[in-house]
Amino acid sequence: DAGITQSPRHKVTETGTPVTLRCHQTENHRYMYWYRQDPGHGLRLIHYSYGVKDTDKGEVSDGYSVSRSKTEDFLLTLESATSSQTSVYFCAISDAGTGLQETQYFGPGTRLLVL
Amino acid sequence: AQKVTQAQTEISVVEKEDVTLDCVYETRDTTYYLFWYKQPPSGELVFLIRRNSFDEQNEISGRYSWNFQKSTSSFNFTITASQVVDSAVYFCALSEPAGGSYIPTFGRGTSLIVHP
Image (cartoon, rainbow over all chains, first blue to last red; front, side, top):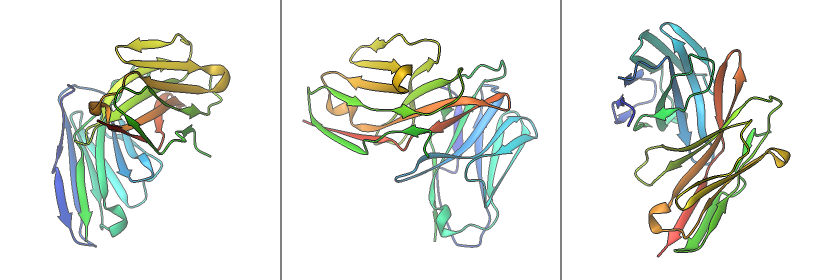
């Protein structure tokens, strides 16, 4: 199994509060991704990173920011959480540095409930 | 329009039946990759298979088989003699070049329920 951990695994928060989710990898992979999973929508890309301090937006980036100061850590921040951000969040990694797509491997997920 | 369409939202079968999960994709690129992932009730996402656009050979792995047809832009997944442990949500995904990187797009998933 790819070494990917996410923390916290579960979180309940209130509307308007900031929330930071952490993804940590031990594989030294270049690419890291944040997805959200909602019923009827499958997996939707929020942001991704292709290197330290190199990030880009995905399909549903509004209301989210990311940071990657080290290869192994990719942080997802909800600046001011809203109920629509209640979801399961997955981190993924891949080693696409050669230009060829490598398989994405996923972390265990974080369940976030915004009240 | 969806780039990856999994038209079957939910499929219910009885154990030992064969079942095919459909995946239709849309791309203008000649080089791309297709994937299938499994998400069991425990919630983790498990990689099953990757196929590149230049390899149309069908793949078989135990009870699982995949039929890739570029002519119909389909990458279907068949489970032979289904078992209760096959109950899961299955996702098909497409990776296309995007500014030099390959960013996957996932279908909405097909929930497979296998009854004993």
